[in-house]
Image (tube, rainbow, N blue to C red):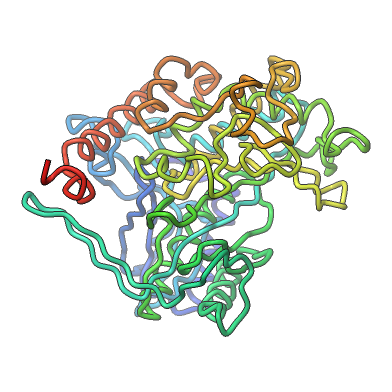
Length: 466
């Protein structure tokens, strides 16, 4: 049994008041598996339930979450009381928490593959290695809305079919209503996210002509941002179901339509001030920021195993459609992996945008890996200019051969090969354990093998009559 600290006692008292004031009937513990899929377990309210959960937690089978092996998979979920939210999608009044994962030993050791644990470890390296205090993160969520969706895969057949209420002739970026069919849905979503404590910067129709949307949220710390990513997806999936529509965060759900990413804006702070700002430098980013950029680009191929971890990810990361395929940086070139927004006028918002990630990522591992790469750049003083990563404002695809531009992997297998051969920066201070990395590679190779052995409908069109 774990000893409860004074701070935890105060948090328990606050949570019990929340339960009483809202007539809560159910406690819900949420946690994502290694891949990033959300799971939960519900407990009907009883006296002292929160104290019991903090002392004992809830046991579960970690192997069913893609963790570890079946023979040693007993684990414990313990709620993080700071993440309490009333769940609007449950009929019973439900208080929901994100949970931390622990082993069953007497010390209650944090589980090394728990994404929230990895995120906390990664955040601790900011002060230790960079001289800054915090890392702040602002994600952009791109997704498609379809009116109807059908798909199936069997031994004797495979297909998908989507119907969309919108069909623009050309680029639909910032399309206005009444042609922007889902502006009211996005309004509803943003009001709901506010109830979850998530501040939305703006929302709009994205480039895709058949229902592509975007919602961007304000900056938060790494762990809070990763929690928010999970919450945004949970809220949008449930709200879509209530409105009898279908959303997907798949990076490339439609042929010859723009892909959906999860671009991430980030910067460090020190003493409450932006640690990357220096007026007059390229993009007003100082040497510390350039080293961070250098670390991302130098380690970009390895990073892709966590930022773009699905086979579908690489159907988006192809030249065209403003896809960020080049390991370069610039102020305006959207083919670059890193873009420094030139519209930022407030020095405290000086930042850069890492554009490759997509929402098939486990957000805790994705953001932690990005931070670890940036920290590696600062430790090793990786200057992106000296390394040949830019700045690069020319058409990258046209000049790639002459300028020796480096590119992201072409598929998931290449990204896993890169991770397998060079994961040292991720393993610094054992933030990403060897066990986690090996389990990740094993799980992802299973996904690749599943895809590689399944005939594709388009192969019938190409080869059936040969």
